[in-house]
Image 1 (cartoon, rainbow, N blue to C red):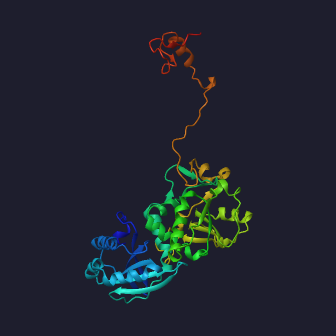
Image 2: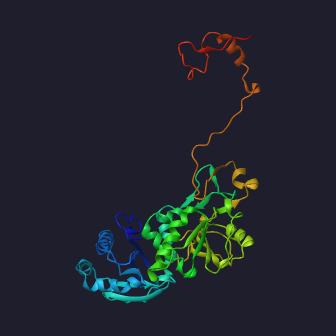
Length: 385
């Protein structure tokens, strides 16, 4: 595995680099994908990203630069005329390919701007799932309980594993790539998005950025947070072809089924950002995190599948495991939780009475000592035989 798959993209603002390999028809191909979220390629940033990768790894077979379609021509021109990008072309013999995607998220144009390639084109659509999975795992986004505890998710069910969706929202360029994955699943005329957490506001804004790059006068998508399991029953979902519901992460699809019971939306209008579960139902999903030999070789193994239980019949609790409640629509771990304990006279040991009889009225025990204004004369506990 190339080392750069593990390093951070710290210092990069508009670019997201990802190094991976593909084996097809017994041909091994090493690819450096560089995704640009901007309307024009940031040349110095691109040079930094590629040089950093070359310093850590062998030269890739291909460098694939991914841009939105309106940025395609100026990006191709930059590779032909830029002195900054010429330094990269002098350093590598790799094929440098510029690929563009349209408002539907599918590849529209592709051009080799340096070198030559012997490989069949690897379509952008085939890279979305594995790339989003890489983003999640790089930020440790799949939480697993270790030791004698497990989690209670906001639905009230218990599990030992859950997806921390916020891990794919850490970096702006990475988030823009995740939003690219939503484009084939929505209408380009989308004007209203319901989300299960306020954390997806930025995700929907990234979708708006993509669509506005094609139609600059396009208004932003209106976003409403129905607050997941806490609020979906009270939410009056507006039913229209331009309305979509985004669910941050799921391992069962339960929330989407509940929404379909009360809103006359089609299943295709409820989109899971991340999904990893046992259900064989066909959910509309941007990224299925499960491992697939071609589409998602970095995916999660079946042994990592989450198992959830009803709180009243939790197998984990029966084994003595303690549940930790996850709070809010961000699935946050709570701070220390005080546990009230009531002590009655029956709890007192037999020796307690003789102890108080011996020490009572000796000014050993003080009541309210920390709160007394005159600490030189605290109240004492009188001896009452």
